[in-house]
Image (cartoon, rainbow, N blue to C red):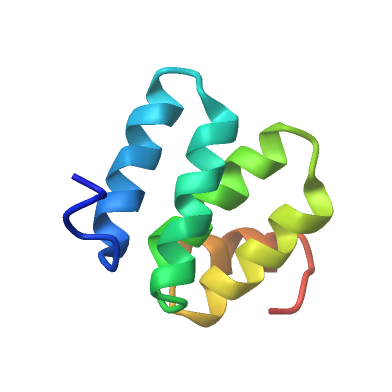
Length: 88
Protein backbone atom coordinates (compact mmCIF):
# COMPACT_ATOMS: atom_id res chain seq x y z
CA UNK A 1 0.00 0.00 0.00
CA UNK A 2 2.86 2.40 0.74
CA UNK A 3 4.21 2.06 -2.80
CA UNK A 4 0.90 3.28 -4.19
CA UNK A 5 0.43 6.30 -1.91
CA UNK A 6 3.81 7.46 -0.59
CA UNK A 7 2.39 10.94 0.04
CA UNK A 8 -0.40 9.77 2.33
CA UNK A 9 0.35 10.19 6.03
CA UNK A 10 -2.60 7.94 6.91
CA UNK A 11 -0.96 4.96 5.21
CA UNK A 12 2.20 5.36 7.31
CA UNK A 13 0.17 6.09 10.44
CA UNK A 14 -1.99 2.99 10.04
CA UNK A 15 1.03 0.79 9.35
CA UNK A 16 2.68 2.29 12.43
CA UNK A 17 -0.29 1.21 14.52
CA UNK A 18 -0.02 -2.30 13.08
CA UNK A 19 3.69 -2.45 13.92
CA UNK A 20 3.03 -1.09 17.40
CA UNK A 21 0.37 -3.73 18.10
CA UNK A 22 2.82 -6.40 16.93
CA UNK A 23 5.48 -5.12 19.33
CA UNK A 24 7.67 -3.80 16.49
CA UNK A 25 8.26 -0.46 18.17
CA UNK A 26 11.22 0.74 16.10
CA UNK A 27 9.30 0.12 12.86
CA UNK A 28 6.26 1.87 14.34
CA UNK A 29 8.35 4.91 15.31
CA UNK A 30 9.77 5.00 11.77
CA UNK A 31 6.30 4.92 10.23
CA UNK A 32 5.03 7.68 12.52
CA UNK A 33 8.10 9.71 11.52
CA UNK A 34 7.27 9.10 7.85
CA UNK A 35 3.69 10.24 8.46
CA UNK A 36 4.82 13.58 9.91
CA UNK A 37 7.43 13.92 7.19
CA UNK A 38 4.65 13.71 4.60
CA UNK A 39 2.33 15.96 6.64
CA UNK A 40 3.95 17.97 9.46
CA UNK A 41 0.44 18.84 10.71
CA UNK A 42 -0.55 15.20 11.33
CA UNK A 43 -0.98 15.41 15.09
CA UNK A 44 -2.04 11.82 15.72
CA UNK A 45 1.32 10.55 14.48
CA UNK A 46 3.15 12.87 16.89
CA UNK A 47 0.99 11.54 19.74
CA UNK A 48 1.67 7.91 18.94
CA UNK A 49 5.37 8.45 18.36
CA UNK A 50 5.61 10.41 21.62
CA UNK A 51 3.97 7.58 23.53
CA UNK A 52 6.35 5.00 22.10
CA UNK A 53 9.41 7.17 22.62
CA UNK A 54 8.35 7.79 26.22
CA UNK A 55 7.97 4.06 26.83
CA UNK A 56 11.43 3.49 25.35
CA UNK A 57 12.98 6.00 27.76
CA UNK A 58 13.51 8.66 25.07
CA UNK A 59 11.82 11.31 27.19
CA UNK A 60 13.42 14.41 25.67
CA UNK A 61 12.41 13.45 22.14
CA UNK A 62 8.98 12.29 23.39
CA UNK A 63 8.33 15.66 25.04
CA UNK A 64 9.21 17.46 21.80
CA UNK A 65 6.63 15.35 19.97
CA UNK A 66 4.11 15.98 22.75
CA UNK A 67 4.67 19.73 22.44
CA UNK A 68 4.16 19.59 18.69
CA UNK A 69 0.99 17.53 19.08
CA UNK A 70 -0.27 20.01 21.69
CA UNK A 71 0.41 22.94 19.36
CA UNK A 72 -1.54 21.10 16.66
CA UNK A 73 -4.55 20.91 18.99
CA UNK A 74 -4.24 17.37 20.32
CA UNK A 75 -6.09 17.78 23.60
CA UNK A 76 -4.66 14.70 25.35
CA UNK A 77 -1.14 16.07 24.93
CA UNK A 78 -2.18 19.54 26.07
CA UNK A 79 -3.64 18.07 29.26
CA UNK A 80 -0.64 15.81 29.89
CA UNK A 81 1.92 18.58 29.42
CA UNK A 82 -0.07 20.98 31.58
CA UNK A 83 -0.24 18.34 34.34
CA UNK A 84 3.57 18.11 34.22
CA UNK A 85 4.04 21.89 34.19
CA UNK A 86 5.54 21.82 30.69
CA UNK A 87 4.92 24.76 28.36
CA UNK A 88 3.95 23.91 24.82
